[in-house]
Length: 218
Image (cartoon, rainbow, N blue to C red):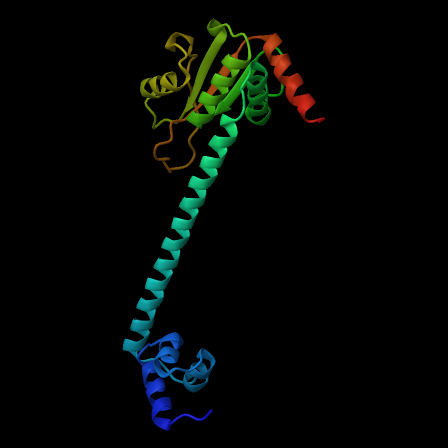
């Protein structure tokens, strides 16, 4: 198909001014490949480069916004599905023993069998472990101990209180805090340190180990 030379000249002029191939193809009712063929040798003016960059930035921002919205909606969907799945389960003592054992298998100490040691910096995980431990096993709360690991930029008293609120373990059952060597200058914002939860019961420790060992063989 042949086109009037004025159309080709106009297309090239638009390209120099930073118009995209899509805009040119829409303007003159041609394909993008034809627009590219006509304008591929044209050099953009300074104003054209600025315009094109602005359009690219806007398009990129729009794409990122779309991705964020899609991701947010997917998370809502998965969270809703997860809640629906868990609500269908009649959580018994055995279930909590399994949950506790799986968490301990992932994050707990493996080199002792006369007590439990569970260390993490995630308050939600710490809460979950203690909840599953108490609901799954007969626990003597007086045998629970907590030990926080902090850096020199932390306030020991404040961090002990923070982890006491998370664990619900009395401060009288907190051991002396461990000050971790800080070799970098980076201070992690909102980092609360980590806490080690100890429970001194060989019976419970061995039961938990037996459960996660058996799970591995299913």
